[in-house]
Length: 310
Image (cartoon, rainbow, N blue to C red; front, side, top):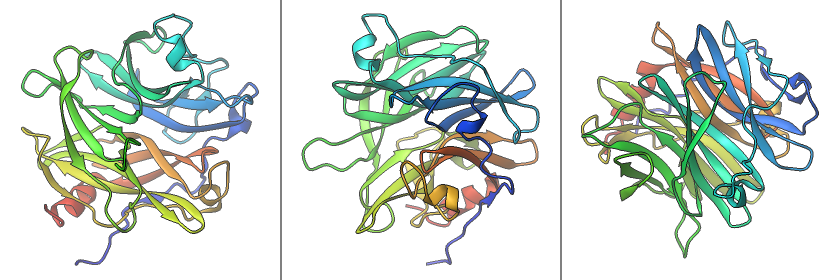
């Protein structure tokens, strides 16, 4: 096996956001979706209040490193009877995908029945329209592809916790973003660095070699869980086909802000931004306590997957 490659370089002034940056009282800020909008970098932050419930708030930057957080939440748990029972305990871990002129959010709706995937959309990051609760429980870690494939919307998610099954990455399809089916398993935990469960982290990026996405693997150890990152490459025409994936983790907790926090030893990205020079910025929650950013070359991530073809 080729020598493992660790392609990410942390920003020298991490963490870029902590609860001290939030202009209202909260417990933590972490697990942010990311995109570019209206000439700015935009983060959609998961902020956990002191009661333990999460909501989503926007942060803006001109350079991708120094962010200013809005002074009030953007999306709170819904009071609509259709959604309220399932968002009662909070809305968590957003991802954002641009399809045409609209930006679609997938997030975890958390209520007394467990976590399930919800989808909404915006054009301006002012208004927000909920579309549906897309899955039953127990499901989370969902991302949308940035274009239809053979007339279908495509989503990756992580149903888990039933019977003896561990958390695997699945793919599913929809004609309208509401009705989902034709689900297939893509990648399942294996002995080693992701032996407990897997979950897609970032929306797929289209490259000439395939759809690239980052995923997390959770390893159960005597000292607790460790969340680390791998890469997966899917076929452009048939995303059910895994071209290759990293058999080792390519990014994991090392720094004190990643090792120590509300949930220690966690790197959990929800946002990836591609730059014009071929580099990427990866925004990740660290120890469920703050947000950091790291950078890599997109081409190098693709190469890791191609070097380990299925």
